[in-house]
Image (cartoon, rainbow, N blue to C red; front, side, top):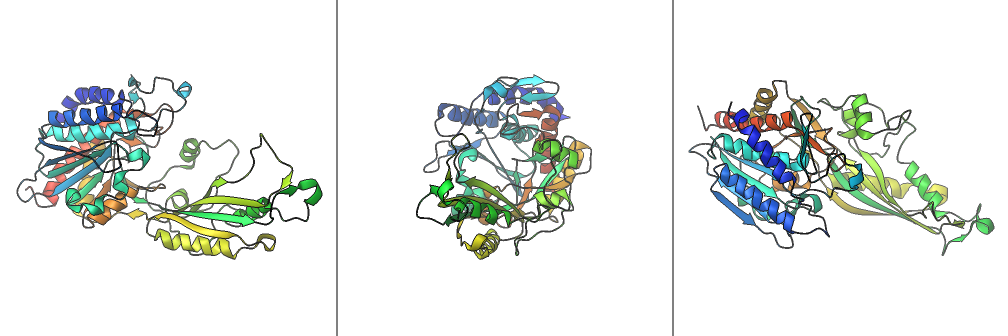
Length: 444
């Protein structure tokens, strides 16, 4: 098989790309980002792609690699997206290997960005290389360099829809539920922010002189936040959508391991795990004003502010869900105290079409590559890019699959990609080109 012949070279290229510390965060040098950008262009040229450009978006440092292969007569066009930037390595003492030296060990390649998302970069390039840069479908490749720090594609696609015009899109920034299980991500929860403020006094007062009668804003806030969940940990806010999840999900043991839940500590909520983390709401306190335990103050708090993150059912409008949370919090009166509740940013979720030629082709490609029945899963986190692309080209089928898996330690120490999963991701994309051409009318 052509993919097997290409894999040694693709692995070496992945090692070289991983060794480039292309961190896009503020305070890091731009030179590695540009080096990674240039490396991607060189590899695309090596794969036989001729039409390659660099797109610079105002206010962004890293240029976007934009490549295109024209469709054969009657064939559909596929857009493939991923990114070449990475998050910082963090505390390097927690790494078993140097984060920006790709180390191959026990069938895996370790290094920052191996899974998120440089293996996906190379899987796209590898799939094109299978056909010498002339696949049986038209191809557009979008590989950006600032996904981790506020992607320009969170908002840019609707302003330039022709650049993204395609019949199907593969978002290669995800992976499988577990190694060996080919997985399509078919839904993403939406997100909304809500700010809550409570003021009870003109200023903090000594707890010995006033505590017990003076209304403590921090205590009131704690009671207000506690009203969001019942005794089992389920969100009780009316108007937030929750449905049963019928696709693949983690076992309880897998989830406890992945979430690093302390022994003896129960998970929150009732019902299926997929329902709790993917097709139901979640409210998290992401900020709370309080003195550090390293510097406690004997004072009744006059003011307290909290910031909440609401995760929303993939098919519920995020603003609608946010309004439900605002109404609920505004109606509460802990100790008769009123809170000021303010709506913040929102981002809608995503639910894929499961009956189009792209979905059928992706299912067939994953089945062939992994020699296993494909599963569907969702993502608890939002990917604004997906919705922006959908707004730009609403008719395109959105397909999310990639080379990583839930155990890849993305954004954490000892990030890794399994080389067998990497090879299967290359094969899946190459097979998708063939299957999609056949199913969408471009090949017999």
